[in-house]
Image (tube, rainbow, N blue to C red; front, side):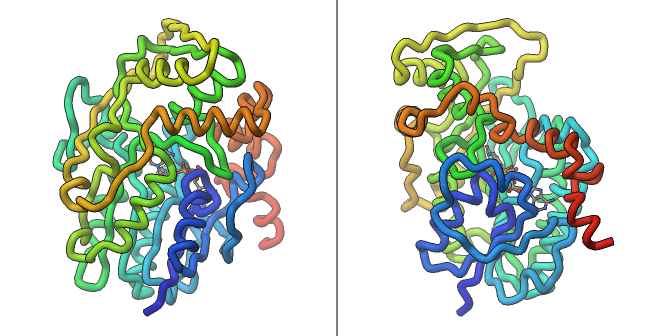
Length: 349
Ligand SMILES: NC(=O)c1ccc[n+]([C@@H]2O[C@H](COP(=O)([O-])OP(=O)(O)OC[C@H]3O[C@@H](n4cnc5c(N)ncnc54)[C@H](O)[C@@H]3O)[C@@H](O)[C@H]2O)c1
């Protein structure tokens, strides 16, 4: 049986942690990624795999032939990028994702794991959301995940099994580091400035999960009996992963000596709040353990930042905030106004 797995977005934050894990588990991994963030490396990659360097919008059936599974991570990966230009998010995250799934099915790929997000439940004050809760996407990014899931689910049949893993906010060390996700941001601020500034009262709830746990969970689902995962959506995590932002900040402040917390009222404060019910994942995969706690994860990050001598300049460096880096690529003319590499467009013309 072929063990070939195509991982889109393998060069990103989650992908560069998941890829070595898959290789170690014996899979023949091929990456497909346009490489928006290939220069945004904090620590070296653990492995190099064959890389189809192309835009997801140009994916072809030949890229997928012979694969037993596609793990689809490639996306414009947050709300701020979606707000910059909703059409890009619609085209890449939704249209190109659905087309990728259609190509995968045509190529005979059996499983399709889609990296989705709990953000699709919207702002659900004091509500705990499970996979059957109404979806209420508030942003272009959230809508792209809902629409992709719905369209890809319609492709499911005896030959093609999509699975939708709805992640919380991910934290932890990765070669293609991001400081723009909540816990990563708090730890980096604490280590490099000695303070954490909360732009809300800290009461919003967030499900947060360690990048290695999320990568392991994808591998577990990939290896699960197909009837358990066929055309299913799972909130990817377990109950203890719901935290209030204030509690995350306090945990970080305890770990980083001398760190203080400041609350600054801000009109555009991020007040999204949701608690996620992870019961379906736990019931379906009773043998799987999410191993990281926030405390261990924050400590791991702080230790890594201390030992690599991470500075305030690194913290604010555009390479580690997805929106800033894409803006830089656009403003320097390296990406065109459809978010494609200029140099590649010139070579092809
Ligand atoms: N990081 C999180 O907290 C989080 C939470 C929930 C869901 N997710 C989802 O998980 C996936 C991975 O997230 P991440 O944090 O690794 O994001 P990331 O931005 O670090 O990585 C995304 C990767 O996709 C690639 N990509 C983007 N557009 C592309 C295109 N048009 N063609 C080819 N490649 C393209 C980028 O080059 C990048 O390597 C995304 O689908 C994201 O929406 C992430």
